[in-house]
Length: 162
Image (cartoon, rainbow, N blue to C red; front, side):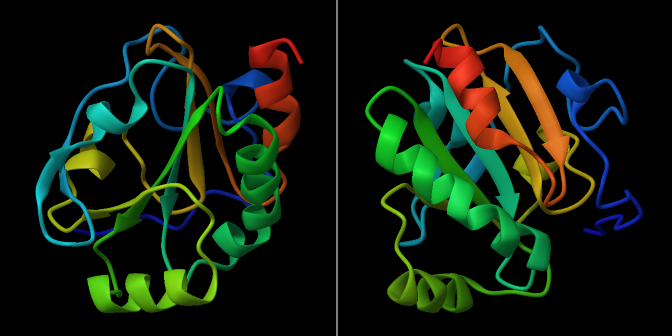
């Protein structure tokens, strides 16, 4: 699996009208065969269905992901009961052990899933880390963005009407 790291940091999601990343607006968020951190086979869709969801394609080595973490923490704290958050740990240049070690230092209170075979990366056309996809309550894509400059809190507030 090769991730393309060519998108500019300032690229915004479709909601920002600039670079198109991941899936087009209005399409149903797909399922994908991934694993939980205990090695159990799970489907990503089971972690995002039932209410609006925020999915981040993430890695321990991703500085842009690290820059987004305070927003994810705030969203989890303020809206975690109204929205599902999930991090998809890509299987590139990291291991489940490294992901677990990261979570020992900072457990944000939402699940991290392991995408060892790249199924979620392919399903969501996530060509790099720090791609964030937001699904509405019906599971349809309403936002897709990349990089540290995303206003995720603002996007969540618009979606939830807060």
